[in-house]
Amino acid sequence: MSRTQYYCASTLDGFIAEADDTIDWLTGYRGSYDGPNTEPGGRGNYERFYEEVGALVMGSVTYSFVIDEIDEWPYRGKPTWVLSSRELPTPDGEDVRITKADVSDLHREMIAAAGERHLWVVGGGDVASQFADAGLLDDVIVTVVPVVLGEGKPLFDRRLPGGPMQLTGTRTFDSGMVELTYAIVRK
Ligand SMILES: NC(=O)c1ccc[n+]([C@@H]2O[C@H](COP(=O)([O-])OP(=O)(O)OC[C@H]3O[C@@H](n4cnc5c(N)ncnc54)[C@H](OP(=O)(O)O)[C@@H]3O)[C@@H](O)[C@H]2O)c1
Image 1 (cartoon, helix red, strand yellow):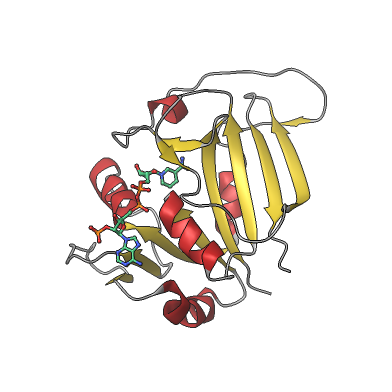
Image 2: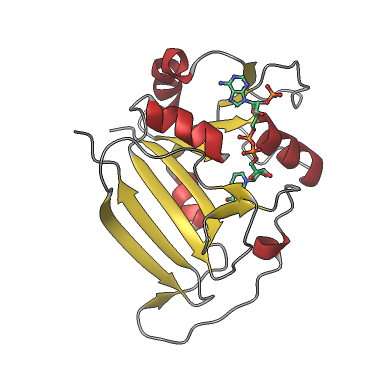
């Protein structure tokens, strides 16, 4: 069953990027942990997660970062929606759809495109909040990096509707990062 999952890396104080959209705190992080029950991994278990992704959705700031910083489109073959009120260039030959439609109106199409796999809400925090506000978010999967920035772009822009989430999984990595998986509890 396809799930709508917000998967990202966050600082310990809940930021996914600096205020200027840089992420050196993540790309430059070099930590270690030699306690029990660890898994190898810098950025958690990204490859395993990505294999289960059937479609993606992201905001335009995140999209611009991907286009500017990464030479080849990294999500080849996976339908991707970019939320934007502007016209933006798209990579040649890739299924990238720029739209300003409401996420509630897009969700059915996104889930159909994901097939048996999941819909990855890449970010940022406002996009994640749009899905949460509409009752469309199933899981929050956060890889916590032990860094405190004090300010930046938040994990969520707004309070999550409903009560606390339900912890459904944890993974500890030898890098010192910890992945937390929570299911959204709907009333
Ligand atoms: N740490 C991680 O794992 C992680 C994950 C994801 C992102 N990031 C980073 O976090 C930062 C996120 O930045 P952000 O929160 O400012 O931005 P964002 O969510 O990527 O983009 C926000 C922009 O998307 C457009 N938008 C969003 N919803 C829309 C809608 N329903 N209709 C029309 N347009 C819509 C608007 O811009 P326009 O209409 O002007 O285009 C809005 O200003 C980026 O630097 C990104 O690279 C980090």
